[in-house]
Image (cartoon, rainbow, N blue to C red; front, side):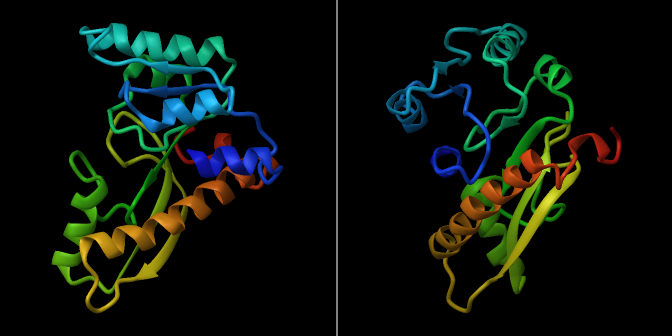
Length: 189
């Protein structure tokens, strides 16, 4: 999230971060948003035990702030149907592997890196994709590979993948804003 905000502030992405939403009240993302004077919300099942109410509150916050593109950056919960419907084809997610491999429910963070290492694969990477009702199955917008090095651990691989994630997400959002990637031209849209 901070890489994207920094890129917007530096003019690398011609966009204005409109709002930050986190399901974790202690999230550093909320503190960073507040520091950057971006409206920030903690919206979780603690305040909204009914998943539909939570989904509606997230959707309403995004609509209230005039969001054009929803960018998931560390948000670890499944996006609800109301939000997906309201922002269909305009919700982006980043995945720390080359989808469709190592995707789906439960495949996030170190779980992904561990699976890559256990497989013996010689390369991994990062995928930016559109969010749909099914985990990690939306249209792929961008991918970048990187080698799995001999002696890599989950932690060393995660560190190297994170560097690529920051660069690829900023580049992909820039390409969307500039019109090089047209979300309306994607398969299924």
